[in-house]
Image (cartoon, rainbow, N blue to C red; front, side):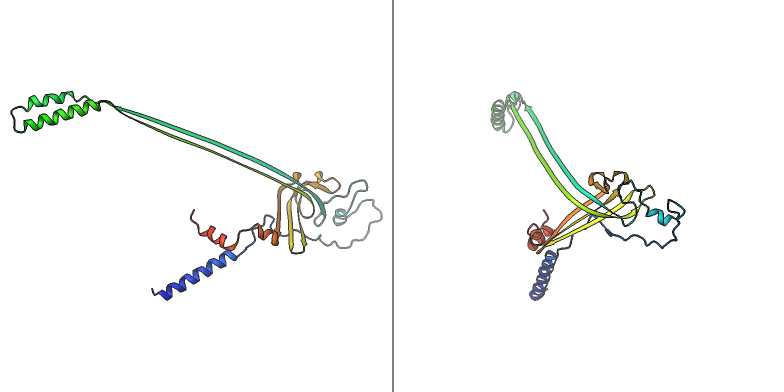
Length: 252
């Protein structure tokens, strides 16, 4: 591989890394699909003046009792959701470990003093007596060997998180389930100058929980609530492209 080809490969790799870092793909939303719908059109039916109640199903779906608070019941109706979500989580952990080991070694080398008598008269007897004498002295000096080892480990960790979300948003009934529950979803977009805020919500509402056609988010099933922002403020809270590249390439 020539130096020129190596330079081209490095340049292409750097350009690819810059494109990856500069790419700011939006995060996957929690609320998927449409957040609004229109009620089905109702064909005009001849009036039945001889009855106090609607005679057709289409007319019955539009019937509103006189002494009942208006509340959503059909696809396309709207309800007000009071957002009041507060979460708090705390976690702490403490770990400790200790290990101690002791070893004692005792050696009796006094019997080596008899080596001189055993090897007396043999070739090298003088050297043998000298080695036996030194070994006996060394053994007596180290006649009690001991070893101690201690291993200790300790670790602590804690984490806490608190979140609060309050406000109101109006949602649309997307579907009426067979048991009468309402599948609702709503979206609110607010743009001020170069800043944009998007709030999305979806979930299932029991009509009996509606009070003046409003419900709190704590009474919604399968609640999905998200708040996203776009603009300089959101960009300031996001890492730069070089930091993103280093985080993706770092093996640690």
